[in-house]
Amino acid sequence: MAHGWIAQTAIAAAVSLTALTGQAAAQTAVPLGDEDHGAALWQAECAACHQIGAGAEHDIGPHLNRVFGRRAGSLEGFAYSDSIARMGRDGLRWDIRTLDAYIENPYSLVSGTRMAYPGLPGAEDRADLIAFLRVYSDAPSDIPGAPPTARRVEPDLPEEVLAIEGDREYGQFLASECTTCHQRGGAAQGIPSITNWPEERFVVAMHAYRQGLRPHDVMQSVARRLDDEQIAALASYFATIDD
Image 1 (spheres, rainbow, N blue to C red):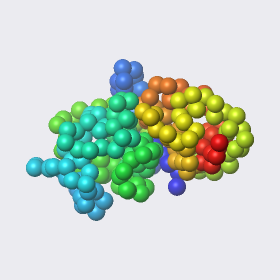
Image 2: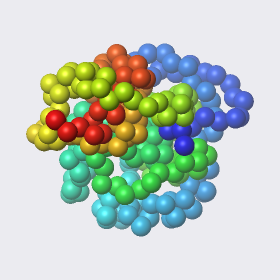
Image 3: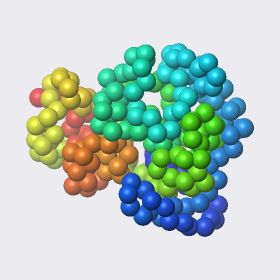
């Protein structure tokens, strides 16, 4: 399955301009989703671990009231994983774009998440579920990052990118920049380990930094300097690191 960060639609729609992080950006005006169908998806996909609505409390997962605009890992009284707390400190906030990516593939944003959820592959289903979540935010007509009837369209991650067979020796050569911060031995002393990651998880994470989904200025800069072959080579090296 291609890991597209934002759902593409086949619906022809008008193009409008809106302010996005202080700059004008093209937006494709499309319906956000069917909140009634989203409610049914919530019961099937989410309600076993999360609560939402009046009286919602933390459960296996945190409650999801007022999730739009909230910094990841920031609710009082819930013991978040170190990974999602770190992403929140880096600046990850929940909006249409990041929720879509996280619901499709949680590891695309938070590699060490404890959320044991395989992801929701259908673009329309994700849009409907997000529409349902929006109902329980403080200001559903003012979603950060996009107007209420528009979603930013991002390119999918092509299957051929995920299929690249990385050159491990080349990855070892490139890894010196990575290992100035990340420990080859897998220690995570304030910086997450990337040792023995599955290759696809590494590739997805790096493209998330490249596209700005994962917030971290240094990692975004590194990812944007690497081409697809170099990312695949690093993924191959760190997946089987033994030195």
